[in-house]
Image: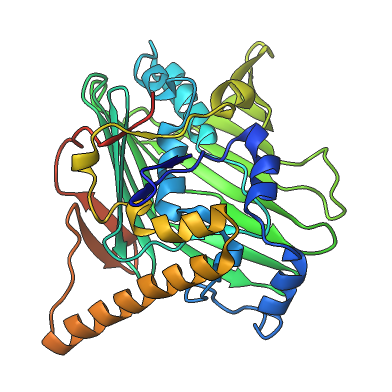
Length: 381
């Protein structure tokens, strides 16, 4: 979807039924051959954080938009289910289901834009207001703050992706903490992110893999989730599978076993009685997702992702690769110029919406400046 062609470009979110169609729409010709050519001089083990991609390898949206979509692009109000649970174990189970819902299919061979420093993304859905800001460029760190004053829910994320090339694959570790706060209950849930694995041989594909831990100190409950990709030869049995458990932190006593596939259904089985029940259905939650619309054009910031990358996105959508490349070059050169200006004046850069800190023990920490996120100029109906 293109809204106000001269200024704002908004595209449909990644969803289950859209991954194949999106891949056809966005990919350049001979993409796999282009990827091999791009990586032929990259050494295994190399950090790809500073790797510059041509628009040939981009989808028409920023990483900030993808992070935001994983929160506001859902068909079920899963955050309300979290806060409305009658017991601590009910709420914890709903939080596990919500965390699974933040995973989306990723298109092989293409990636979102790396956000520029200070880039923002601000969208509302119902009472949930979501604000993201790129708080660091080298290294890339993205911050997210989302609040729902009616349900008294708050989200704070800090994402620091580190992609590394391993010859036959690229593995991206997503450092940083995700916090979900249910303020009415006085409960805070802390969790990490799975890794993103891009595999070139023998069967090209993209998977979320690795271990995720969800902890709630106030209730003493924890969950361990293990995400698995497809087999080496591309088998479907374990493709996008999840296995894990919910247990008591103090006694390590398992309450529920978790099993399923994040792009299909996920169930829990009660250890006491052996009864299973579905806690997550991907088709119900992340299919048929709606594109944000402009509700208040005058409230759109120049730093908004859909504004910053509009010319590049128009070029990709029309497959005018020369136009897309020139527009991207303009953005990158402008950013380099701003960095040089600040360095010449000895002027540090500070985020507008977050405070940023780093420690060797805890990594990057992004704290929102405002208590509540205001309603956004972009909305999802």
